Image (cartoon, rainbow, N blue to C red; front, top):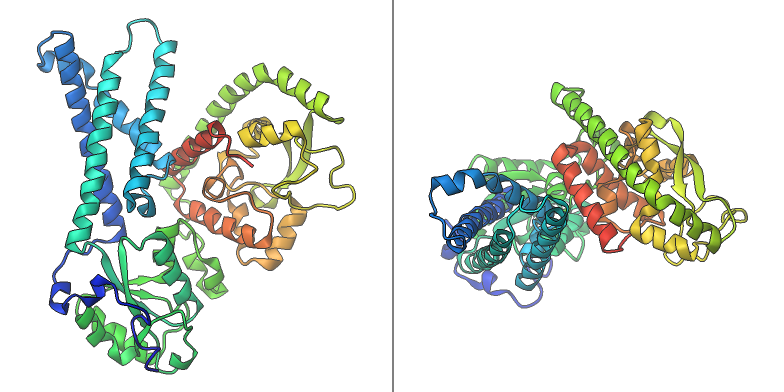
Length: 490
């Protein structure tokens, strides 16, 4: 067990070789606290940018920078930060893996600033002459780029010198422990420091070689003190062995925090690890709050927004339809529209409408199947339609009819649902809400064409079902629009 109980078989990092005295009393922030810190810093930079932008505007116009000038422009303190945050979420700017890399973070910030300017310019040219300021938005964009970029760089500098990373000890040695170890390593290594793992004395011989075991349950209190651990990640998703339970309780009474592996995995990845949750632990996967007043109000507001967006979208689509229909007909034989049976909320079958992007009778010889990345049955015009997601726009008719929503899990064919429900636990949970034109899985994961991909997308769908809100819907819609504009659809 000598090799199995070492923290790392390779060279130890500088953090590992520091005296243990340095490891106590340092600031260790929770995952949610890190995101909150980023948002507070960003909103401060945004508001300061508005103030400086207004000041430069007043100086340029040779007007006194007083309350008489500021108050009529107070709406910019709401509009610009709100638009900036929407674009930031749409570009995954609060993903800790993005924020932990200076180059990636600054490039993403520049992209957000350009998008904000483009949106403002479009509105500017569509608005009555003189109704919107011209130079102010340029002042704001440049200043916010500098201030936010400086704040993000300073935040990384502080983390590098003050050990902001939260030290965690993984409790468990099975597949669940491996999964959370890899999730932290791939998604949040700049924000978490994994000290090692602890498994039951009866499980030590069977622990995976990829895990660095420090001891058994009885060693937990000493290991927590020795390494300055602030959080135990519980990777036992079923019954906890007696020696682990005793060790965990001894740490808990001393103030060490406990977090289930499933909860931390969900926070880090935006997915729910259903493959590591048994049927008897369904409460970790499925929402349990019931039809609360807040949920009912959300559903009413969502339906009103669905109708509004569907009417506006169809009005614009009608203008493009003649050109799209001509292109489809000239490219390949067959109808302009494609109608297919899909499963909606509660397992009800409905007929979903799309623009045809594949050859007529593409599945005649093969039967129902997933489309491959370079599927030869996709037409030339169809590839363009899929890249821009214009083939999905006719589903706004399904939205108006109440069969779909703008945001939700993508509807699947009955035969595919039947097959996937046999392979993947909780798959039919997707049918608890209305399917959507776009969804959390669509903006976070590539186009799926296998059972493994369907499992990953279900993890995202269940996350959406558990956390659905107007704010999350807005983020998904913004990211979808970005996908369309960047021609990244599939």
